[in-house]
Length: 522
Image (cartoon, rainbow, N blue to C red):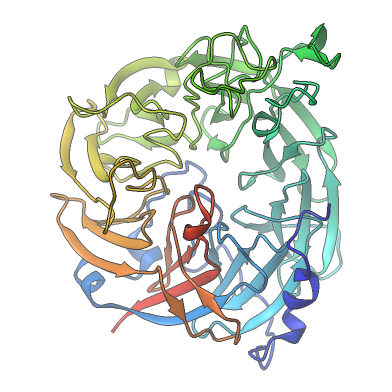
């Protein structure tokens, strides 16, 4: 009912930690020094950290050592990607707490208790109208509340519930630009709607813009324009509705030149699937009006528990169950050496699409990453939380196990490195990588479902370094902690250090963990 693990409110409060920072000096300008701010490190969501921002070179990566570990109290799934600005780490937890830590030592400056679990990366940006407060930390929770809190001390500045549907949530990190907070809204209605007691389905995914200073709603764009209408009743007499679904799971990508935002959409929950399901979309940043769209797969209506071999298949299930091939990851906007720009979007199907953002999303190329003998991806997908791109290539981790590099200009494959889980068993669903990739010059980092963190050469895919996070750790805040599966957020690199959470418990409880790890070279 609370949206948080039982008892976590007291356990997670930083006031009860033994490693409180001795002082809390004024927060330095978060835009001035090395930083990984928000989901994609930059408005274009490249997940590429520059040399000056990383302060970590490729030849130092093999000497990375664990510097400190921080435990999330009462946590069962570590899924908040750490943000690093002004020498501080801002990180969220499934216990509803957001923490501010010292990047060097892991001591805690403050904590903030949200109304529900928070799985966002935190975005730090300027704010006005609150006295001496200069910077806010922006994030959303799993009850569709969006917050702005004082980045220096964690005090609440404003909070707004942006969607009333009971299943709605702000899963993705917000994007903050030009005094606006751009928020994606998703739902897990599709995981309960197959029950014939549930009035399936009424949720509609959306993207919206809030005033960064006040939380005032500026515009809201529903991906399905029409509101759901009653269509029939099932044999239990429960009213069914349509159309519904099309969550937006990822952080919007900002195109300053075109004054546009780009994002991908998910599958429908009812059939026939609406026009903008499984699509890449572009909206006007100022008004929220549609600029262009591209549908990767038509007719994809999906609910959990509705597979055709399920003997208890519900009447609520779509007649023709789709494969659940969302565009679940943030698109990547990159400028090529010749000055042309390209927008890259990876679909759960394993197909990577490249669009021209300056020609209304004209398709430039598409490449499917399935190997010749690979089976068609199921609802778990092949590309899930997304890739990263430097000046030449884009890098994607695959749920089947491995990392691939594609040439940005053509989509041609540069290299592939298999990364299968240790002690893998036949039929394992958690054999590979679905977490987001992060890059610095010469190195791509990705975590695996087996808990191993990998660093690969971007030149040829050689493995440069590995670390097993699936074990117990002694933590700076005295909380018992262990790592587990790494299936969602990626590492963040800034100021000579690498930060990553471990313990994404979605496929099974054996992958559960509650630890944030900090590395630096010896």
